[in-house]
Length: 220
Image 1: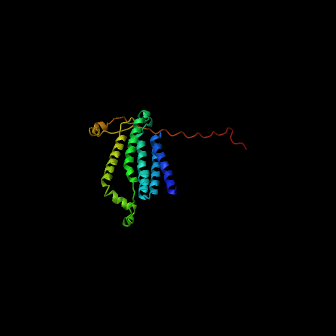
Image 2: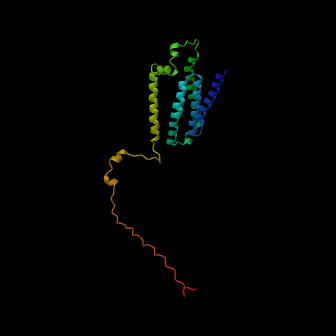
């Protein structure tokens, strides 16, 4: 086994462990941190595959920006993770069946990429462009509509996250614009007549008394 193969299996094992802990961690914050670990290991695997741009984009965009938003959303929602564990074992068989179906579908889609017999010779002209430029050409020509669809899905996810934070809670405060428009000046301001209160200056303290002279006068 080569060094690259050993590194791949090591980071892939850490990636699988971190992915498993994302869905089994009791704390939501710990799950988000395990997701950061999973992203970091996926970036290293992409580096081993010589996809430097994807690795750097994963670290900068997902680990550096998206995960920060995840943590903000988790803190704003203030979710009670104990409520989500009710009925976990009851729904586990159905969830396992759905996961197995999804894994089978992904395997059927991806198996075609592993059946390559003849590797096409690389074009020397395309090799001079670099990975980043070639990736941009593929995304914005061949995969333009899937990228736009993914952007719309992300927009819907952002709106859904904002809507979840606006739910009514006993400690949340919100304003009703219709009630604000119907408010009148008499409802906002009330003039109260009060008698003036004067703070009189206090009398200055009396000076200390002079010491009394000794009786009988001075003695020589």
